[in-house]
Image (cartoon, rainbow, N blue to C red; front, top):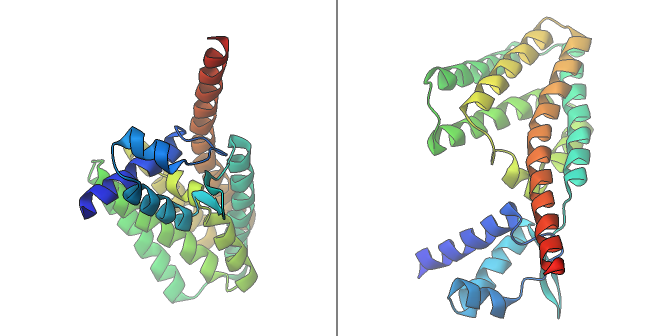
Length: 233
């Protein structure tokens, strides 16, 4: 039963992320239970979990609705994140960092290089890369010792849909590119190249966001086309 409940939860989550359940759609328990061939109990539990994750919004006496994010919303989010990443790299290049911080960043860069050198791509490799990527960006931000920057960065980063989508269309080639960019950002920071550090970090984050925005726009186009076909029919 536990396995079945997780399967239902995964199917609904994938439906949200694939755009099968578009933003603003009301998640009707009866209809979902019928379409997925289960009782309402696992549907109710799944909706509650996805609501807690922030993918759905809950309104008393109305139920759950898919939280709406347009491709423009995602682009706007990454525009803010790019500025914050650039500011963090710039600040660190200006003020310098301790040997401990430099050593921590160097180890992260080395771990990334070792992962890339395997020449493979799998769910396991992706999971490990996500950890390395998170460590790199968090270490740069935290090393600035600017609590306000850290708070704003985490607020801009911890957006449910974006968190789920970040590595959805990511592959080994993207990992290689990101690793190279991490190395360049690190080099600029260490060498106190303030303007270069800012520009590299901004571009790095912009590239990540652009990939997600492009795919999300494709999904939006498909949904609009499907709606138009239904209206014509």
